[in-house]
Amino acid sequence: MAQHLEGDWLELATAGGNTIRVLKAAHPRARRLRLTVTARGARVTYPDGTHPAQVSAFLRHHADWLEQKLDELNLVVKPLPPLRVGHATTVSLRGEEVALDWDEGAYPKVEASAGGLTLVIPRPHTRALLVARGLLASHFETLIRRDVSRWLALYVPQLGLAPTALKVRPMKSLWGSLDTRDRINLDLALALAPPAALRYVLVHELCHLKVRSHAPRFWAQVEQLMPEWREQRDWLRTHGATLKAELDRLVADVAD
View 1 (cartoon, rainbow, N blue to C red):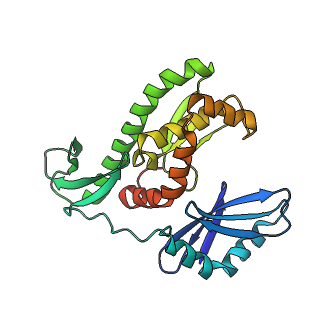
View 2: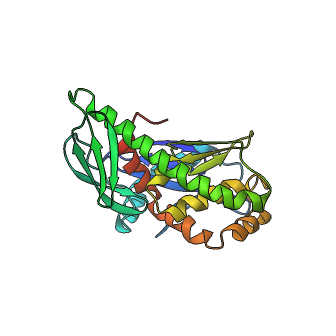
View 3: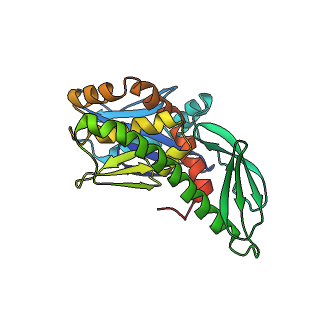
């Protein structure tokens, strides 16, 4: 079982090909490491100053129990079928399951319709899969930027602050971030989530323009801009691992 630490999450890749994401959090009053599993996912808490190697060792020791409990709650990400040229499948898009089909044409493009998406790939098909992945990544980014531009027009006047730039890319564990130059990064997988979940992540990062920490006044600002933020945060916690795995099978090794 491999693991790596990043952000506030620890990801475990099991021998069976599953991925387990564990929320990790230091707690000032914690006296020992503690692992809990609920419908929202797995969480490990530990005393301040605990070495990351201790956290990893603790999770390895409880790996079988953790996988069993998550599997009981249907929270272990099962391996997804690979994207295959010419084979129709279903994908998540803006919170809904839609059809993904293939067609031939003069030039590569994504055709969107009420029924789903069609990947149009010209002959010869020597690089069809790579082209298809690039088309999907570009389409997903376009959807995110379209929504974000509309919401920025609403929220920036209220905040009196604006990000200096927006970057959309696959992110391993995080959904978004704000760097020291006030540039917002958003996870490409958010194109697969309901628009309200994307809006929550944007609001979260915009509020960091005013408060860089997660202090109470930060959450008060989030609440002011989006009173229903808790529902969207919880949705991402429940469905996030599946969403990221879905994006990986669609655009792996293309978008970064």
